[in-house]
Image (cartoon, helix red, strand yellow):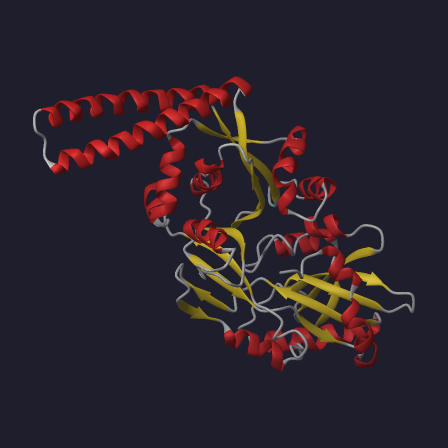
Length: 414
């Protein structure tokens, strides 16, 4: 038994089928990050029959003193509940790291520390798995109190879109139903659409367009694939929709006028006042829709998102929307259409991305983000901060606080 360096094919074969597989622990992610001074190394733990029983991708940086610091995105591909296996893995990993002059490696796990429902009520805990890590040498002392990270997840047991749609929050269902009446069409983008994609997410990211081009170029095979999608509105249909609504409401309003002239009740008067309000709103919408149609007769892209999917999960990594017609909430509709697409392919987990730590605090400026993402998801995963495996304690005190590798990759940010 011992740690060996795996070939790209060996690691790919293992990581593609492991129960803890994720897009960060892949050859694709290695190719995405391993440029210039950053390199990737595939390691595997062999049993006595030379079978790989645990593995890990380490992204590392060579320092001027010939030492290395490393980063493990997505955690180890190992059964953390198997204490004996974890203990052996850590023992042999430490031997390897010492031989290769590592100062430490920082691990960012993607298995949940705790799981909550949409209303942030605790429904499951994996605290014992983190205790296993601590007991075999993972150092939590520096980072354990910095922050917890939260993601909104949709977990399903059915391919039936009606049942999945019913699991969304009532406000999310209303938004999607309303948007579906406006002529929203979802289309998959290509390499030619990157400028449109980036224009829509520009204000929501600190990355440049090259980052996303490289991401999609690196994740471009059957097993792990990046895709961009757009929600586009048929502006003529959008205008005609409000013309129809205004006409229908006017007929209702005329009938209520007749009833009032014949001595209608207070209830009729109340209905008439509400009808007047709807008529005024529809007229305003017609004016706006007419202007939109004149400016965009061929349709208008309202929102976009980028996903990475394997055969197990879909991760929503970036999204954005246009200031035009933002009240249609096309982003929720876009994500729902992507969920439907992959429901039919057997996917059962969808990660809608990070929530702010304030979660469901109505006073927080991030409350709208919580409503949007948790309205689609039925679970909230809490992750702990990154933890360190220290190899050289003396040098660790010097380099731990200035880890250029991890900060430049940007995956330890909140």
